[in-house]
Amino acid sequence: MDRRLYLPEQWFSAEYAERRERCGIPAGVAFQSKSELALAMVERQVHLGLVPYRWLVFDEFFGRDGAFLEAVGACGWYLAEVPNDSRVYLEAPRPGVPAWSGRGRKPSKARVLAKDAQPVAELAASLPCEGWQRFTLKEEKGPIVAHLACLRVLVVRQQGEALAVHERWLVLRREVDSGEVKYYLSNAPKDTALESFARLSVMRSPIESCFQEGKQELGMGDYQVRSYLGWHHHMTLVILAHFFLVRLKLRLAERAPKLTLPQAVMLLKASLPQAEFDLDKAIRVVNYYQERHEAARQSHRKKRLARLGRWFE
Image (cartoon, rainbow, N blue to C red; front, side):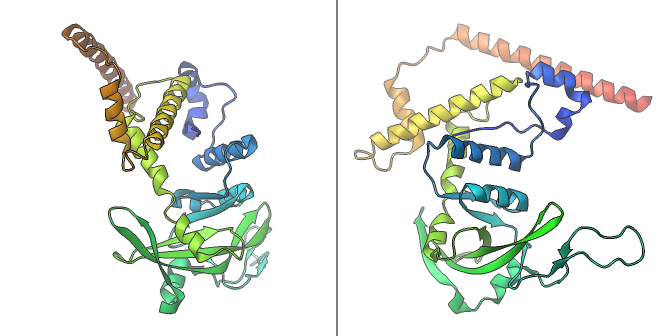
């Protein structure tokens, strides 16, 4: 549905000005973290209003970013996987400005004074057996079965100079076969059923399949571009190709309900005319890659010699 190119912060320094120009990066592009890029994509979909949705799910990388959770919470209900050392409160903490010890700068920012936050892993370990419910989450080479539990907790977020306390769901999922426990936070309403969290806890797998299919079947990671526009062009074509193949699978669902995306690609290759690949074309392709590889080797050699020269100086 959307894509954003992450550029490291150092690319926006004066040292990289020439490289940004060569890559065609627009002057108005500024550094954004991966969380900020993800939030921008979600907010754009909200603004367009083309795809109805209620839930947002994301992995631990985004779940550990408290500022991202609070911002994206304005766009819908989320179920965010969080690290096992994430800390929550069962009772309201006491925020305030700590007393000055008489040394150093006087504290001015509020912080949690009570040290009663608990790691989510400890809460999961302390739950009694009757606190868990067994669910068959989905069928995937056999049933995926897990025990789930949830409880209301409090999280503390820094908002400017003040602290804000938010009530959230802590959702725990323990795999039956491996015993692995996963931890989630959610801003869903208080009356949300545990069945909903069970269903949503496996809803990221189709997204992971999209990336896997895009890389293995559609060349998502096989681009050789150095321009900002070229990267976006390549990713847009991959997204469109994936969308086309998914639509093809849906159209053939009655006759081939188990049709996979690689099989759909094979059917297209068999039914559409293919470009001829003779010896002359093979030689042109080999020569092209030989030239590109040699240019890359020379570029790397030049950079290494420059580094060695600075070292000897």
